[in-house]
Amino acid sequence: MAMEAEAHQLPSSIPESHVLIIMTGGTICMQRSPSGFVPARGFQENCLARLPTFNDGSRPLPMEVVVNEAGERKKYPSLRTPPSAYDRRVRYTVFEFEELLDSSSIDAKGWAEIARTISYNYTLFDAFVVLHGTDSLAYTCSALSFMLQNLGKPVILTGSQAPMLELQNDAADNLLGSLVVAGHFMIPEVCLYFNYKLFRGNRATKVAASDFAAFDSPNCPPLAVTTSMRTQVAWDLVRRPTKLEHFSIQTNLDTNHVACLRIFPGIKPEMVDAVLKLEGLRGLVLETFGAGNAPGGQDNAMTKVLANAIRRGIVIVNVTQCLSGSVSPVYAPGMTLSRAGVVAGQDMTTEAALTKLSYLLALPGATPESVARDMSVSLRGELTQHSQPMFRHPEGGLPEQAKILTALGYAIAQGDLEKVKDIMKGENSWVLNDTDYSGNTPLHIAATSPSVEILRYFLLQGASVHLRNSAGRTPLFLAANAGLTEHVVLLRKSGAHLHADERAVAEMQARQRPGVWALAGVGPKTMKERDLAEEEAAKGDVTIAAGSAPA
Image (cartoon, rainbow, N blue to C red; front, side, top):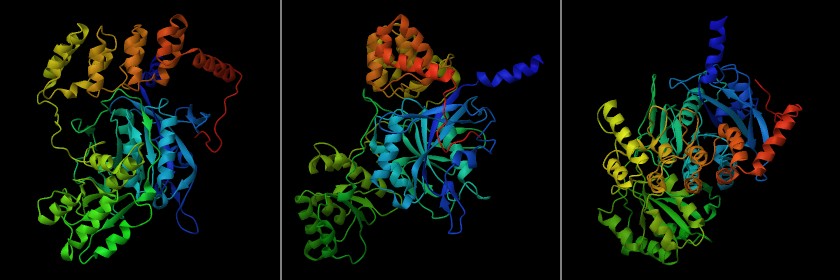
């Protein structure tokens, strides 16, 4: 009996990550009908609850989801995965859009709905998985990478070539892989997961209409690869936020005033001119041959058409038609385009160039000059800038890593900023999100150190404010618990918030020290709301959202 009790209690000691799955539609949720495959609702109940890899059989505890701009919250039943190889479970719930979209008809309105859903629930979940059709998946990934500003959590998009309910499908592996990566690794980027590979979203493109290996990222290696044993993350490629700013979204994309034109042999300048004279056109992505070449036309007529459009304020971006490689003005035709004012899109995909152009044109105060300038600069890792330092994990075993972490911990505790900088020089950026025996990252240690400047330094280097230590504590909780108001203010400015699992303890602490905890986001209002919620729960007034029955 004692052994049974011990076994029963064991799972409770395994930490959980909370992930929101956003169902937008697509093949993954389709079911057969007399008229063919159609999107179907009830994905969690009908597809996931019956699979042991997605449901460990535990009670489907309700998870709160913010469903609209007014902040209305509904409770949805959750499922939980079995323990992973990393001794962690992922608890998740599926939030379905009212209208399940066909990916071939998605537009900026659909992208904005996804972005707003993530924004509404940003502080409630550790990561987000978006289920989407494959036809326009690369466009949505690219668009969201620009719309989600100062992103500090994983957002992973996936789909499938065959529905989950079909006997032979890729849906289960794609979704499970996305859940595992989202729930275990702090990769604060918009990513695309497909066929066991995690790609940077704005580098991916669809390369196959029906193969399971439907996506590739020719100009950027995968950020992670899932094998039979583990998930290998290329941490040297992962981008991290390096600004002291909150997460925010930009939902206004100027997609109505941009176009894409593919150059072909024999194309006439009049054809290009007709496109460039479309009413209201502000930007054009020009898909050219090879390294960025296009015919100049007789008497340079084509070049003149492009130059005249640029003088009218239209931003023209040059990307290659080739699957891999970069636009580089090494041949005369490419140099001619560059001299005319056409922006070299370098190694951006067409999807990234088009959505980036739409994003930049919609920014407040945007001018043709500012948009053209920023199109050549990497904003979200969408193009390769060789001038940027590439950090790699140092060779060697654990003792050397432990040695560096120990030295860094002493320097932080002593408030020695110069020593910290000296240790972080060279190829030691991997240490930012590495942990000691207690699961503390350098940012956790700095959150309770005497020097706020060391904390600022780590934040500017890209340290994650959302990682939790072995006790489940974020750096913000530790700083508030230590009464370090300056540290708390800086962390909040950088987008930090308390994890849902910390709030109950934080609210108890706030009754004793309301000042510092109010700065951390726990004030009388939130405490009162929690008290009222607990009273309602005690009365049995807990409802489950319609259409989502427990498994």
